[in-house]
Image (cartoon, rainbow, N blue to C red):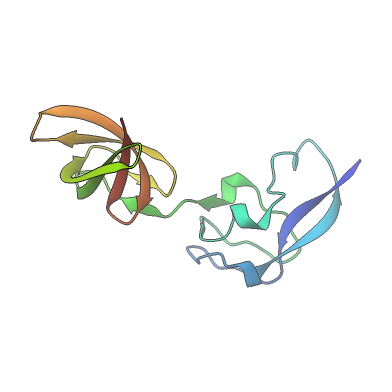
Length: 128
């Protein structure tokens, strides 16, 4: 069985940011070692290479990492949303995360611990 996997067009150094122009699709035989590799370019764009990625090799989740937009202990802008209403407040991040990941935050005004989704640099969205 074959499927299209995402491969690198060029050599990508460790810690380099992955862009659309670096990637292409290639048909590859499905094996036990590559069944969890990326099959969509959009899932890789914006991620960072944890180690060197060689041209023509399919890319697995083990060689990339999400760029941290929120760091543990950092002051973040928290946005509460309920329907069309939104409230902004400052909070402290208790865990680190990249875009789309869920992090814990402490809201000092109410002394409550909340969970929110990272939506941008130093920004967390809390759904109520």
